[in-house]
Structures are given as structure tokens and as C-alpha cells.
Amino acid sequence: GENVGLHLPTLSVQEGDNSIINCAYSNSASDYFIWYKQESGKGPQFIIDIRSNMDKRQGQRVTVLLNKTVKHLSLQIAATQPGDSAVYFCAEVIASGGSNYKLTFGKGTLLTVNP
Amino acid sequence: NAGVMQNPRHLVRRRGQEARLRCSPMKGHSHVYWYRQLPEEGLKFMVYLQKENIIDESGMPKERFSAEFPKEGPSILRIQQVVRGDSAAYFCASSPPNHSGNTIYFGEGSWLTVV
Image 1 (cartoon, rainbow over the protein chains, first blue to last red):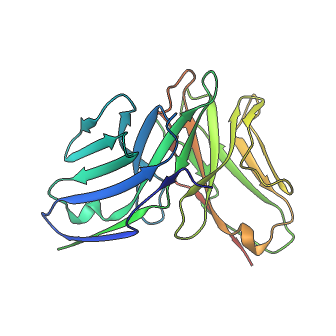
Image 2: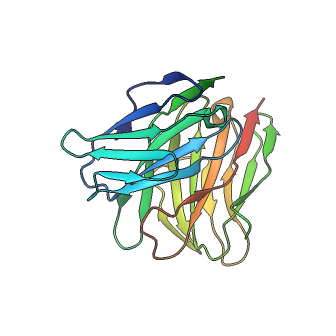
């Protein structure tokens, strides 16, 4: 079964608002968590990652929060723009000996930004 | 520096035919991953390869599917005797050697339609 899942399948926000996308995971052995953005007809695009020994990481307009106590991950997008409309996936990176790493993806949240 | 290149982008096959999907990793990357994405689903891990070596094929169906990454040339995902359930987007990702899991980059995908 899946180790990574999402609370909300769809999220609709107004342009300029902040967006929060949530993700739950079950594997405590993950070294990294990564958020990907996938636009229609395209491949997943790396947004931001966070190492398992961190609680928070900020990028340009994005912040990822990691709560290891409840195994919860969130992606916050500030001042959401129409170009942010996409499906967002959280992915769990699990080491498997040496340099063997796999990504396990959740189902995804569709973010729609209304102008 | 070109990204991960996949071809064909779109492929239509009749039931029973063979499908071959190709992936050229980013320059300097020696690891290749294949993922499958069904409509409105997350990406499912299929196989992880290094040059001339399969590292992890735990996500590969037992029959009809095979993957290779030869010393020269692109990685190939081969699906024999395709069925309608094989219709999906197939994504390739690559990473450099000695990576820590957060440098995995995806191609734009190959959309397979079985009619």
C-alpha cells in the first residue's frame, strides 16, 4: 500500500491568497521529503525539499513544514498566482543501501487558482 | 544542459503489439528510474537502473514488462503484448551518482494509448 497520502484531493483559491497543501506519511525512515508540481501534460517539477532532521524550509514564495510527531508535511504557497494551478505531489525519499533511493508519491492535490 | 529526454511523447498501440519507450538521462546522470501514472493518480515506481544493471525492479509487473539501461544509448522500457490497462503516462527520471535522493529530475513523459 501507499506510504504517502494527501488529505485534500482538490483546493481552489483566489489569486493572491495563500495556499496550504497537506500530506501524511507513514514511513519514519525517510531521509527527505520533496514537493513536486505537475502541470497538465508535463512531468513532475521539483519545487522544494526538506530533510527529515528539519522542521521548516523556505524557498521563493513556498515554505515546507515537517511535523515528525504526527508524520505530516505541508506546502505553503504565498500570494498564489494563476501559474501555480497544477497538481502537487509530496514524495518520500527512502534510502535503500548505498546510493539507492526511491521516491514514493502520494495521489496528488489539484490546486486551482481563480483570477 | 538538456534535461531528461523521453520519446516518443505519444504512442498509440493496438492490443497485442509491443511498446518501446526511450529515456536519455541528463548529462552526468547514471541512474534512471521509470514511473507509471494512471489518469488522476500519483506516480507509481516501476524500476530503478544504473548502467547495465537493474538495482530495484520491485514495481515492475511480473510479465510483459522489461527495462534496460545499456552501456551506450538510452534506457528502454519495453511492454510486450500491450493491453488496454497499460494505457498510462510513463515517466523517466534520472539522478547523478552518489546522490542523496533530492536530485531526481523527471522527463516530460511518454503517453501510451492502447486501442
